[in-house]
Length: 280
Image (tube, rainbow, N blue to C red):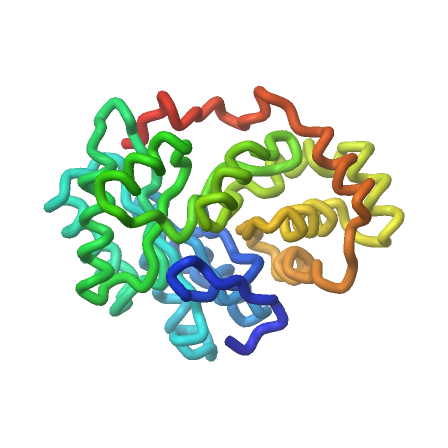
């Protein structure tokens, strides 16, 4: 892919850019314009979901952009209400119809919904959809180690990616260590947490000042050096460019430690714990 963003190779051989673009709440024509702006500025990984109700805006942005489809990596996600095998397979097809795309590069189960206890059935649908050519790579979001172990035990196939909540207030060190052991790539949602809290953090401000970078750039560089793929969102073209320009500096080991010390056990933004949270 022709982009200034480095690439990371997943356990199934598919490559993804080291920084992606989140699209939550970027809907309609304005949303499509913002997503097109991100693509035109150099993003090649675009993240959406069935429940964001903007797969159509993502598809429209892809069509408006001058970047060839095969240079893009488009992600969507299966909602919790469609974990039953037949519903899951149909939902994947519907996601593609909404976006007007022939395939997704990456498709994820959005949440495990453990009370419903059908995520293995949903996973089998993703496996079969990949074999049918609808998806190039399959993964999950918000799965705990016990959920991942069950996928491996019952299907023999581990996800290429687990997209989890990860930011300086909640660094998920144990979960990341498990991913590394299993060869699963970590992807970070809400990588900048609540931006107002991030921007006001004195530790991050100090480190940003040292490097003559913005606080957001420092946080996204922290993600990169942790080995995660962050997917920040912004409708501002200037901020979009800023968020991906993190590859011309490095954080020192001590600076990484300082940022990791911001993390806390109760750092989840909305108390959405995968052991109990049920997505509709």
